[in-house]
Image 1 (cartoon, rainbow, N blue to C red):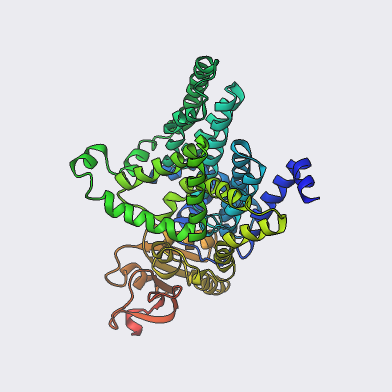
Image 2 (tube, one colour):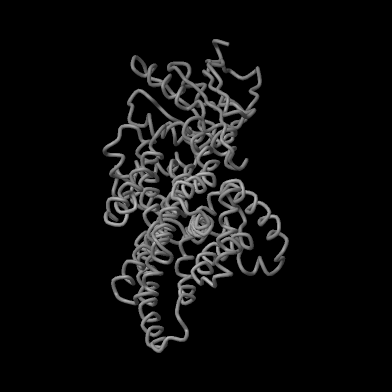
Length: 500
């Protein structure tokens, strides 16, 4: 019965998959506190929404603007800016899961597509980033759809597939520069071509023609950002994260091996051992069955993975999210081969569940009590345990809002870019009774705050500093532990010197 429903109601099944992804991402959406990058992007979106002249504000920091643009409508409909920002990633994940289903179905069969989808839904890697207002879920969405339509283009070289492939590649490029891999990997699609076919040369010529259209459309969309005078900053920003070819050649293995160790460790922890085992099985079965599709999917992982290892100057686990998704299809293929050993449907379902139970458990922890989830330490520091994490900011904002109902208040922050002061600007900028100032570095109580404190309730919040000298004109209001780490957000009231 279930099998017939799946076969006869493809659209309904896709809707269910997408809806399940949405539900699992939206539950307890705010249980991870806002962190630095989110605060920056949401604040940019607010500024752009308020002033059309600032639509390209993200380019001032070398970041492409599509994420902030997509936040505009959600900011209009949702009171909490953090919900609005994160909803873009929730929706991106809900669309990505459909692409994985279609890829598995297109190059293997419907069963592979279904299992690919559930691996995506249960993966702690996607669970984390589909719930954060950062670019990587949106980037992964664009890239996995580009892969799907490039596969379609190989099987049927026509203008429709070329146009859509070009558009989604272009959308990826105005999300993040890593989307350039969708164009670099265009020729990899030729792996699927039957070289002995009589129409090989004719089809190859058609493919080259339409692949050229994909490349041109992607580049046109990307270069449309040149209307902004800040376009050139993208390249400068990229080189703060990657080495140039010249730098790499001068010492090719100085950074490659350490980078690779870090990337492999992050991948193993986020992918989880059961899924890695399924990926290995998929590769082994693919080799023995001479499945060119497995090679294509693996190339979409290994080429960007090794490139990041070779050229990465500053790397984070989220950089490998998009390249991990093709491996989910390989894992699904491996699982389908395993369950073929069992004849009854119930046993097959149990076997698949046993492979997915640990990723599912970690994803449930992320939904319910994320601070105890097993994620790489680098991300743990970003989201929970160190200064990029926003533990305490909700309480500080609530305190300031309460004070501002009856009087004017001034808040100073340790930091002029990032979580501080952006998070306070996000929630308090439009409050006429709140005045916000950022300072860096804070080696003393800023004189401006000392002066303000003479007539107005004035506060100073620290993100980096963990020990404040007793001689400073400050009175501790409260401090908030970050996650399960050993750092705190410190919240002080500034005391006028004459009152000390």
